[in-house]
Length: 411
Ligand code: SF4
Ligand code: SF4
Image (cartoon, rainbow, N blue to C red; front, side):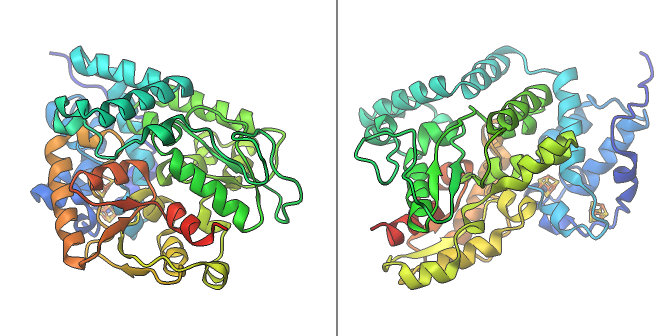
């Protein structure tokens, strides 16, 4: 058998920056499940080093298992005193693994079909209408629990066009004139446009309520976040370039109401290093960056709910906006916001991770469910489609911050 060759694909400075201190271990949700070094960030960086230096092939079963069980929550990155850019190292590892050992058999077919659908808005929409019908007729129960989205997609939401304010028509492509704060572009995306149209509608209504002119076009089909996390770098970069191109010639904030998509789009500048990509990323914002708590507190109507706040990992660890969103939601009159004692811990969703690594995903979800129960809350606030669907599997009603804000601010 031939000796493995040094890979030299990882950023050497980043690999060297890890001093193996282990400070990140307690933040890692997969390490929490097994307490095995290979399921923690330090062991994973060691696996990358071994492959990079040619000690073991990256495809060695132990190395591959260590790397593919990472949920890519980036909690380790947020606490690392050496500022190791773990997310970028892991994306390099997953891309290389994806190229060397592409998914085969049924999993290969599921990947090929799934990502083909996700990159086409019309296909996602048709699939969502089909899912809404299945759920309406209760036929979705024939699917195994793991593949059955807990979120109920209402047929009315799936079929209804977006309503922009100031128009008598059901769906409009032009925005009402005279909005004081100018245009704000709502990024529609793929899964969000198919299954979370009610959230997009809430975002539109909130933007209009605080003086923006919500715009729905241009509407590139997908940001590429799911692709990059699944080791499909070429596809992710193609989608990212198309997204940047689509917004060329426009100005104003690009509002992203999915934390995972927003995190990826804010990193396009780092992906490509071009002035166009950097200026695009600078325009990408979460709703909490364009709506102030004081205007919600002053103008909002009461929303009498007691909810637990669960910040999506990519909002907390990549965008650094967990506290900002918490402050915005807490400003809604009448709303009581409670904090789970493991709020910084991943729920185990991770895009398609919960389907690919069901044992880890289920263990993380069980731990999250217990923490949410300890708060005594009636429901959960979380702003990411994957987290919303994962947490809903344990019976929680999950509210998106935009929905709560819209409920308070809608005329
Ligand atoms: S990733 Fe950072 S925190 Fe974790 S072991 Fe390396 S240096 Fe320490
Ligand atoms: S990204 Fe998350 S799951 Fe992966 S090593 Fe870091 S903390 Fe653990």
